[in-house]
Length: 160
Image 1 (tube, one colour):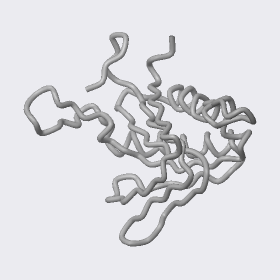
Image 2 (cartoon, one colour):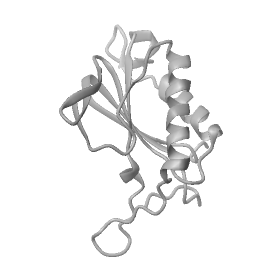
Image 3 (cartoon, helix red, strand yellow):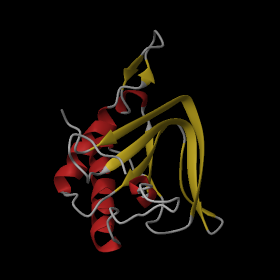
């Protein structure tokens, strides 16, 4: 399992800059975007609304889009970008023992779903756009066209 600065538990986001992305459940597209971010989010049982707010602000504020000189200097709002948010408990896999991952650090549905829904509401407020989503706990097929590629990992306990 990932561990930063003595913390064992944290909300984590894998943010991919994409030209397009979609998530399909049972053969039906449940969320689809053009340019913006595909965000895979992993939630632990110790995460709180504070983690949602801090991580959400970081996601929206990431300056990874090219400016007029081609430098990564613009944020999501500057390029009118979109977000596809997908819950992914496997981000908290522990492979310490053996070859079968353990997911005991991942939050159960009663904790994770409210925080996932809170993240959707937070990102909607911050971007002013409808956030496209997967479905918590569903078997999802995620298609992306990674732009760059640019992939950034952010965790809510690594704030220094």
